[in-house]
View 1 (cartoon, rainbow, N blue to C red):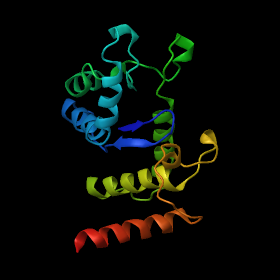
View 2 (cartoon, helix red, strand yellow; view 1 turned 90 degrees about the horizontal axis):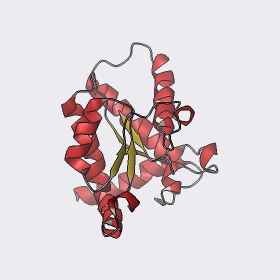
View 3 (spheres, rainbow, N blue to C red; view 1 turned 45 degrees about the horizontal axis):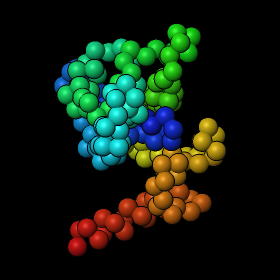
Length: 182
C-alpha cells in the first residue's frame, strides 16, 4: 500500500502487506496521520468556519476497497475528505480526482520486483527494500512530471544535497545519527 501526494509525488506512507485487512489499512493510514497530522489539522482549522460543502480540506483518493474507508473515518473523520472508489480511468467516468500517482509508483515497484531473483526471504527484507525505494524516489531521482525536481524538492524539504544525491543523503543521515547517539 502506498500514499503519494499528487502535487509533489512525495511518498507519504507505504506498507508491505500480504493482505489488505482492516487492521493493515488502519496501520497504513496511521503512518500518514503520524507524519502529516499538523498539516491536515492546520488546513482544517482554516476551513472549519465555512459551510461543510465549501470547505477545501486535504483530500485522500483511494480505490474502492472498503477497509480504506473505515480506517479513514476512524483517523480523519471531519478533518479531511475522502474520494472513495476512484478507478484508474476516472476521467472517463467524470471524476475530478484520481489515484494515478499511486498506481504509477506501484507499477514501478512491480517492474523492479520482477527482476529480483529469488524475491525476498522475509517480510523484513521486503520492508527494507520498500524503505530504500521510498527514500530514492523522494530524495534522489528527479522526475520529468515535476520539472526535473525530486519529490522532496517539490515538497520544499531542502536537505542541500549536491549532484550525488544518494551519497550526500547517506552522509546527511550519518551525521544526524552520530549526533543522536552521543
